[in-house]
Image 1 (tube, rainbow, N blue to C red):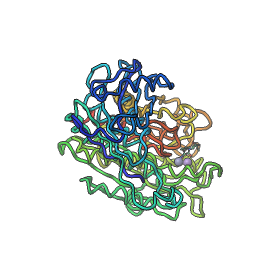
Image 2: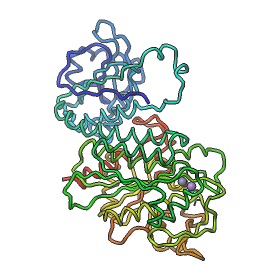
Image 3: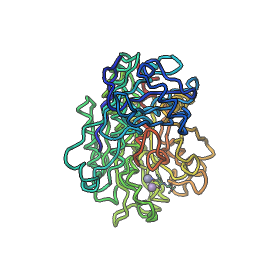
Image 4: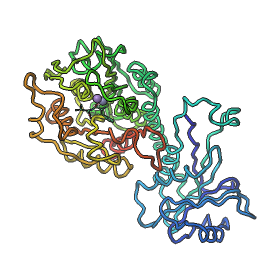
Amino acid sequence: MTSNPVVSFHKTTTNETGTLVVLTDETLALGPAAQALGVADLVQKAAATSDYKGKSLAILDILAPAGLTFDRLVVVGLGKAQELVEGDWSRLGGAIMGALRKAEAATLHSERPDGIAIAGEQLADIGLGAVLRAYSFDRYKSKGKKGKDEDKAPKPPVTLDIVAAEAGKAKKAWAGRSAVADGAILARELVNEPANVLGPVEFAEKAAELEKLGVTIETLTEKQMKKLGMRALLGVAQGSSRPPRLVAMHWNGSKAKEKPVAFVGKGVVFDTGGISIKPAGGMEDMKGDMGGAAAVVGLMHALAARKAKANVVGIIGLVENMPDGNAQRPGDIVAAASGVTIEIINTDAEGRLVLADALWYAQKTYEPKVIVDLATLTGAIMVALGSDYAGMFATDDALAGALSKAGEATGEKVWRMPLGPAYDKMIESKFADIKNTGGRYGGSITAAQFLKRFVDDGVAWAHLDIAGTAMGSPQTEVNRSWASGWGVRILDRLVADNYEG
Ligand code: BES
Ligand code: MN
Ligand code: ZN
């Protein structure tokens, strides 16, 4: 992993060397600090001889401007300044980081040409976007391949000094935002890591490292899960030589008697499909089938690191889905810990089996008022929504609304899909209470409807199907890695806006 850039905020600067970054809108006007640098003419001229029109996130790169103290001027477009929305600030930070060469110090004059001050939270979002953009997963690239000179000494991290009127407020906001950046990067690290390195036990150990931040950890072994009757989860795990784990992480930032919000994650460290084995093409991507669990761990990191004033519990079910002499078969019937019996039709519909017992455990142990689960659950959600929106299924309109809002604000967007009794019919089994697949149509919905059978009445519940957004999703201004860390930002925001204070 590349080391994170060092972001800091300042009211003024004396450093006018190295790389300077200034902002313009579509009028190509500069703010006062940038004007004081004497670069207005230079920007106009460079724009006139290029395609730069100040459009949102456009870059105008002016190398070695003659007669000035700095050696590079990067101009970044804000588009129409009056049309800026909340999510644009982290994207702006990402675009700025993308324009900087590696191992370089840069100073950003963060001001709007229309004279409106950029708020502390917005400045912190610029920093968040910059840090997220700089991440890459290159642990397994041999050093020699990265270029000879790079081997000699580890490069210092990029430093980004952000100069802004609201620097004081930005510093305060940055304490929280940098915690979120670290959480999202932790989630990416877990998803990018291959399954030979990160099995259920190793994943559980990574989660347990949150103890350092004051998170309480409880890890259930196979034996303990057997005792609790978690046969749905265990049935998935039984084909693997690596034993399963269930990890509960709690962060108690609020009053002891306050009921927690629970986040539950699917943690299939590798999904071969089991006996209903997947085709070979693209199967390597199934190392990311623990994206839900990774997001929950990243979220708990963020909440603890920023000392969120909320009681939150994160629960992850960690298994490997393998074909083997001991593997579960189609036709098998298992009883989940809740007592519901399940006929296994397809062993590749394993995520819902893991979640069934994880959801039950969350409710009987912590009596949460709200549960949000995340899972790379169905290929069908990618057919329905592509990779820009995650699928959201919810039993509670207020929770659905709050998630939509948090998604728009952070850029991790959700699109609500239906639940309903008609879909229950599709998962009726000939032999058991329910079966684990619902046929060809509405695959994401029948999966969600299956999960709902394990959620108690009266609990506000939402399920996020992140198969399209957690991994292999398109490159964005804030992510160039295969794993996006999807879920940490939206859920951190959900907690901040709804369950704190
Ligand atoms: N982990 C997969 C879903 C998935 C597919 C995630 C592609 C990310 C990318 C899940 O366990 C699965 O195999 N689902 C099946 C369900 C089917 C057997 C009912 C699917 O989507 O095909
Ligand atoms: Mn599967
Ligand atoms: Zn899976």
